[in-house]
Length: 65
Image (cartoon, rainbow, N blue to C red; front, side):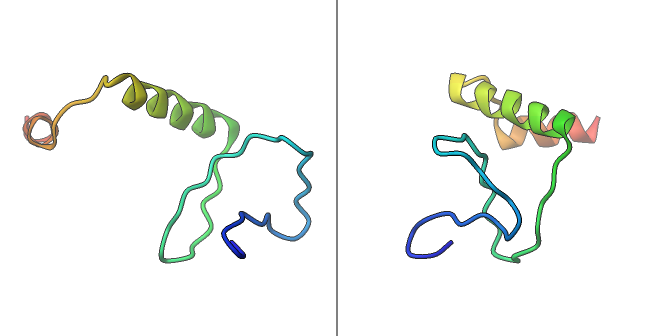
């Protein structure tokens, strides 16, 4: 990111208006997803946007079963 704008890595070319997903991580470790993982992430984001979520407490209960 430079001056508040997302700047693609060298060698990556995007056309004007391209849609991208940005995953911010303070560790600055690149995250690369294959197309299936990218689709799963998009589906999960859409679920969250719809409010189709569970609480952290419920998640922990499910994990402990």
